[in-house]
Length: 443
Image (cartoon, rainbow, N blue to C red; front, side, top):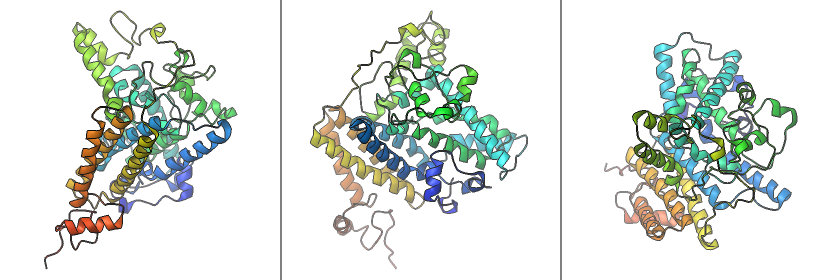
């Protein structure tokens, strides 16, 4: 997954099937890791298409959209932030796996065998179940995973609300597979397991009959995202719900599910969404007396405190009544339109950056990432109606003009590109103007 030129293209048929884990072993088996497509990055148009389909179905069936604009933008912002580190290096989920494979593997199963493919499917899904369960039962792991649960809505955009630093612990649960499963096979299933979980984040699909017995479905996952007492710490499955049935964590959907954290964070600011629970752990850690109690703050459940069971007391979980009103932005309609336009422009820069990362200089790559982060932060400030939002947005717009002038970003209007080229002597004569920082030849 390192060399885009060596990767196989993904057809439309494959793109649709990969979203539902329906790809065949003979079309997703690769000898070298570098040949494995970046399926997650290639899934962006399918994410958008399925969200639009969900919107249409929801309008037809219920006469309203499946969620709120401010919540959806915050979820997509979290997803973008979680992907930015991969612009600079291979993920730790792969680097750690490769290290174990190269130094400690016991046997090497054939990479092109369907048996290896299906065994890896089960192994990755089993590892995900235990990682996911520990991410709810260990406070320091929950600090990362809570990002995904912070939305008070439940729709396909919620699936994109991912943590920036969750992958720095999840690799531990997959590492035993490196003793016998080739990295190229593992890399395929790691992505498919994640992509499968996209479509189950919806309320427009009800019960799927017999499939509910085996697969993780929208109904099962709605329970997992609920903050009702009966929903807490249930249905950890990735693809197969059988793990929850086996290990006693299964719960069927019955009463109305209210979504989000038991204590809502009431913000659209991306850094608070990502890191607020870490701050809470830090404060609680220093306020709690005794070494073993401090250790427990980190490694017992989020609801633990001295004198309580490892996972806390269920009766202390706030009861829901079913009429809770989700936190919403007070921004005007005009400001919301402005925010959507800026987000769409940023998303284009984001996609272009991933597509061109091999050709971009490290300086340009870093500046683009900083601009994307600044844009997401500014959008969060605007939605939260922060006092400094206008100042931050003005600075962001000025930074955009500077980055275009010095060739680190590309304006969308051709006439503006020509203006920046004329204004920037370093870029004159360079037809690729903002694609990188290459100086024109002097020969």
